[in-house]
Length: 179
Length: 252
Image (cartoon, rainbow over all chains, first blue to last red; front, side):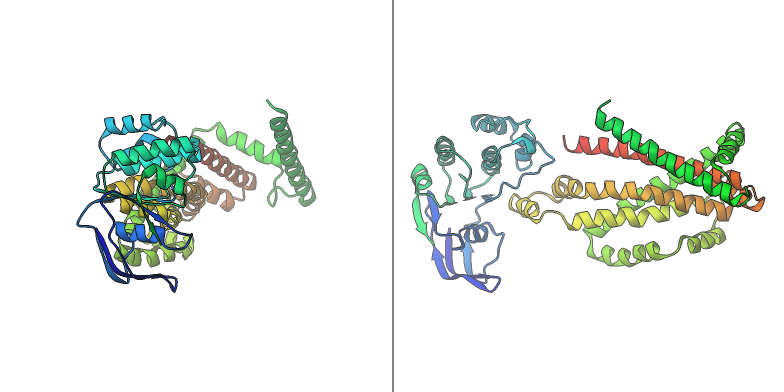
């Protein structure tokens, strides 16, 4: 994966200018103050945004994107939200159980942290080669951060995570890229 | 029954009594049944009507006509809305026509339709024509307001067109569909009855309204109008109940 000489502006604000990055095949943690472009960079890598100039080369790898917002469908239950992106029912049930979420719950019945774990389950169950995760630990307590981090590491996929917290970086054990 | 419900019932009863009293006073002041019959005269006329077989035949036939037009209108509106939402060309073709239908007086359509088809079908067509723009517009507006974040999520997870339609667009447009169906019911009744008045098919509430006016039977005119109002309210209540059950199912 390689980002080369990237230019990107939004609403007349230059976010990236001649920016290059070559993430490792392990875990990469994007850090930086709000507005520095962490989410934008992840979206560019996911192909959800197009660069003004330069290239984003993902080596034709299929990416799974975990948004900063949970973006769950309120008219489906937890299990159906995850099964929307995969056919692997058994593994979905196992993952939800491991994350401590009842698959039959309605989205309106979830707390912030529970909804975050459902969004995580959906991201992990999507058949992909690379994980792009925008603040995956938002709203999770310390114990859950450790648990979720271990599940992410276990996937053994190139993973790029945006975060504000050094504790989260430590839990993931990744390399830091400051924006 | 809770005290809040009792309070509401009491308020409703007082409000109805007030309007009936006002009507009775106005009828007494006018003093001519031909111009303004009293509530009692209307109830008497209604009593005379409901014991006849023709009352039920007329009422049943009108209900069938209006509901047929209503259901056909919903079906056509849904098909046109799907076409509008899925294709820009269909959108630019259909949008102006549907807006013209909405703006055209129903009387113009009725007179035109009388030239083109049998008079018993005109009320069905009119009910349908009034329903289509309302339901179509509501569905399209809700479709256009679909949450962009969910669509971006669908793009990120490469959801198929069918999954996007079934799991994002349809549930997003559903509240608009419900609102459109509810507000279209009243229009279907009004336009259906108006078409019956102008086309006078053999069995119809509208025809009886017309004959009551021609033969100066004002209490009957009021009685038939009361039948239309009561039927419209009852059917709207039934549809509301049925549609809300649908919402519950959708959210399960």
